[in-house]
Every structure is written in structure tokens, then in C-alpha cells.
Image (cartoon, rainbow, N blue to C red):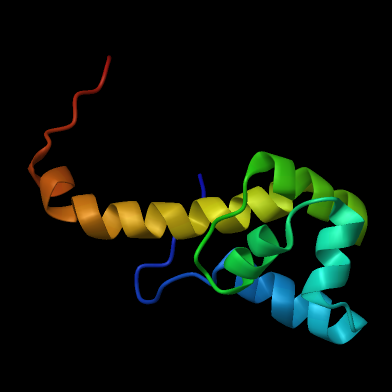
Length: 101
């Protein structure tokens, strides 16, 4: 089970992409978009936290940076689950668990 932080919002995948990959490697948004064969706007929106990472983008980033698709998808899932827990928290508290014996 994935541990989702509750004390602070997890980093957006775009922030990790920018700070851990693009800046250290000197790669521009335009270069990344061209090399991944995806629209510049998609990269820009990811980096500006206006768009999440899709499986297609995760596959391309993993291939480009020699990571795994799971790495990118887990970053996105942690962020999505954090927001879902914040939104659904009170409802989840009211749900009674049922367990099979």
C-alpha cells in the first residue's frame, strides 16, 4: 500500500520533472516536447501544474530519462490520492468497514 502524506501536498510530477531533470540536464521545454514528440503546450501545462502525467507521457518520460513509467505514474497517483483524501475525508469517516471472515 502506498503511503500518502497527510501533512503536506505531495510534489506535482511537473515540479519533479523541472527540478530533478530539466534544470540539471539543461533541457528546455521545447527540446523535451520535440524529443518526446508531444505538443509543447502539454509539457508547459505539466510543468506549470495545470496538467497531470498520463500513461502515454509516463512511457515517453521513462524512455527518455531512463526511469520507469511507474516512477512517473506513482508521482501522479500520490498527488491524486492526496486530493481525493482531502475531498472525501469526512465521507470516508462515516463509512463503516465490512470485512469477510
